[in-house]
Amino acid sequence: MSVPPLQNGGQARLRGELAALCRLAARFDWQEATANHISLAVSEDGAQFLINRRWRDFATLKASELAFVDGGANELPDDVDVTAWAIHGAIHRLVPQARCVVHLHPAYATALSCLKDPTLYPVDQTTARFFNRVAIDDAYSGMADTSQEGERLARILSGRKILMMGNHGLLSIGESAAEAFDAFYHFERAARTLMLAYGTGQPLSVLNDEVAEKTAKAWENDPDFAEAHFTQMRGTLDQTYLS
Image (cartoon, rainbow, N blue to C red; front, top):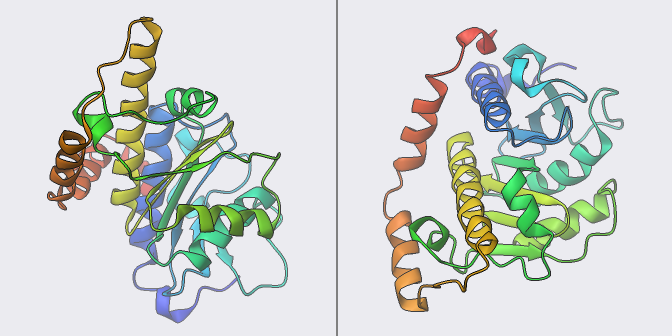
């Protein structure tokens, strides 16, 4: 498949960012074996995007191995999973700020998603970052392999950057790979703290709404943090992923 001329200049950079994000996901053990997907839009409308191919190891994935998907094509490439198209295709198309979509099954966030009450309560500074900022899907009905299911998830996001997928996993979006990575990273850290606190069997000390909201806004007042975080993490990787 040919790449539109619009994307020729910047696609190498985007491929490098997405490959790095996949390798970082493997380092933190967020992905489910060779399943799960991360995508990055390359067209203005999000209809064309890069995504990891089916059954490829995140830990060794290279930029050149990423698939280019065209939403206007009549057929999906053979090596792109149908669930990847259903979820990522719909979100890129319907959610303008979703330039990057990370959908993985990290241990703590997934465990939290399996609770009757999957709320990420603000019990510390990191959990408070997501106070009133998480969309929750409580209607899991099996593999997300239809465009209708992807569209339903896109509607549930409703302007938020984190989607807790009940009985399933976690999804984050961002206007860049750095933003989506940073949100995913900190949500999983927050879920770990909460699940460990639950494990003690003692009552939670939940921050009051005023303090939680103040803390969340303080996180939002540092827009350069995500880019710095992602850049530092990328610097620790074997640079062969760029090839």
